[in-house]
Image (cartoon, rainbow, N blue to C red; front, side, top):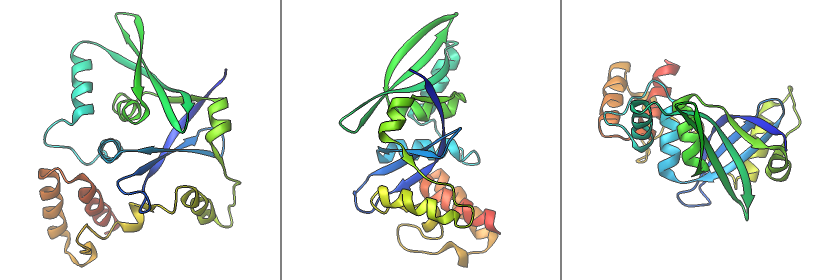
Length: 207
């Protein structure tokens, strides 16, 4: 079976499924998207790895795995989403140590969180993408339509970008000065509230 390379398009939060997040993978040489439902902790870990500017004060579980692997010269070469059963994706982590390759079973969310930290490519098989992928026709005149189609499939999720100016209490960051935003960012990272930190960072970037 032929492998298809995937990239990470983003993470969405679904208001209709409490505590559920959707990781959107994109076909590198095509227009199909592969949505995968993941938990809050894994979504946070993936988001932190994507947001290079946010550094946790202490290593998260996936950071610890990376540090452990580095210490013992273990390299993650690639991630393969190899099976789809009853809506659940199964993945393998392809590792190498002393030129010996090992295959380790993993949850897809964990595998992708590690792939980001090791800069390892992500693949799936063509038949899985054919079965679970969402094919979107390119529409350069209306690029927002593609995003809307994904949202519809994911039960109308609310993306981080759509809520980037509000925290859980409804406060808007647009009213804060740049100095206040930087102070809030430091506090959010110190308290390990990385979702809030990402929203503040986005507001700083807009300035």
